[in-house]
Structure formats: structure tokens, C-alpha cells
Image (cartoon, rainbow, N blue to C red; front, side, top):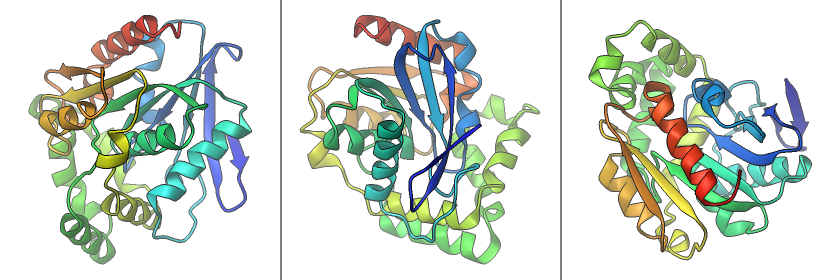
Length: 262
């Protein structure tokens, strides 16, 4: 385990693979930590420098007082990659991680060479929806949202499996203030105009049964970027890297190869 002390926040991160390999960075979703990518990592090609981290208020990272802005989350990613001396990475962002990915690609073209926008959008939900969710958490904790969230996150067949408890536990054990802080960041973000200005190789990934960012919403965002590709993973919800890790890894590997990052 490693901690990057960035001043106002301490980010927990992990590096796997070849320390001298081409950098592949993962940013995970609201209510999860860097273990989200565990099912996919063993299926990826050798020779990559794989970097994962817990965003502020999640996992083993520190928990600055909220609410957070998307700008702060983008700046955290930027400072972490500068700390690790990363340039020209492939940045894979899922859900709020995909919003961070969009913001970072706009801000630092030297850091992000290839973009993968997974189960995300330029705008997710409405301020009213996020206000209601935050009020429920403030009153009854993350547990109040857990069952409804599992229905959006996973397909019906996966929700019947014993492994569901692992992901539910991961969500409800996140720090409440960190969870609320990131809800506020999502609520205040609309990247439609800036994302339409991006010009870099981009792959969009959606899950056919995603109740949080449905395929049409993901496709609408991906279509803002000229030349971007879109892939749909069937029998998967909001976290296809968990439900269909082999197909997810195959999509990533093919895109890495096509963009010359392997």
C-alpha cells in the first residue's frame, strides 16, 4: 500500500504490473474503492504499469471536510499522476471516475493520451435526485440507499449470487462524509460542452442492465467526442468489470492494442 501526501488530501494508491510499462490508470465509482478492478487485472496483458487509487473520502484515502467539487477530484488525480511522474496514460474512469477522466483530459492533455469512459456520462442525474439521496444518507446512513443501489449496479442474475454481499458491504462501509462529498461533486457537474471539445482516442463502455447510467446516456456522451467508439456489455449493470471481467478486459486489451499503448 502507498499513500501520496498531496497536502490537503492523502490518496491511497497501488501500482501493479511492470514498473517501467505503459501507464494504465483506473478511477472507480461512487461507493467503491480500488478493489473494484480486482476481477479485471489478472486478465489484462503483461507489461503494463497499472495504477489504481481511492478518491478522496473513499477507501483508505483521507477524508477532507465536504462537500467536494469535481474540480477538486480532478485536481487530486492530476497531482497523483504528477507525483508518480506519469505522462501519456490510458485513463479508465467508471461512473464518477469517468467524470474525473473527462475533466482531467480537458485540463491536462499531456497526462491523458487515451480515454476509456465506462458507465458514465457528461452529466449524471439531476441536482434534485442527488439532494434526495444525500438527505437519506444524512438521516439514516449509506445503508438507506444500499438495496436500491444494488438494483442499479447489478443485473438480476448477479443480485442472486452470494458475491453481492461483498459489494454491498464495500458501499456501506465507505465514510459517510466522503460519500456525501462525492455526491455533491456529481450533482454540480455538467461536462456536455467541455467534453464535446475533446479530441483523443476514446472508448465508451456501457452495461445493458445499468440502472445508474443506462446505455443510451453513455452513448450520448461518447458521441460528443469525434471518432469515439462505443461498446455494450450484455448481462451486466453499472459495474461490468465485476459481472463480466473477461469481456471487459478483452475490450480494454483490444483498444490498448489499436491505440498503440501495448
